[in-house]
Image (cartoon, helix red, strand yellow):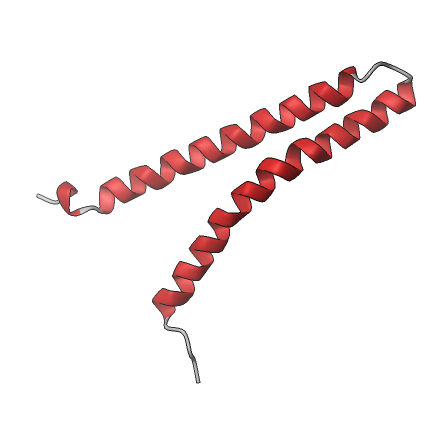
Length: 85
């Protein structure tokens, strides 16, 4: 027997999708920073690539979250009662 209704399953899936934004925000710059650290170690350079890769990772995640939020708000505005004529 199905305990959760379809709408509840959809709500849980949407909430889990939103929760991953925090992990992306933390893990992406860290992962790219570690890659930069490895390359710095390989080439014997200063931590230039570590910082550069971490900043690029952070900028990428922030950009993704911004556009995802913007698309979500546009979809919300289109489906609201104020948009019907």
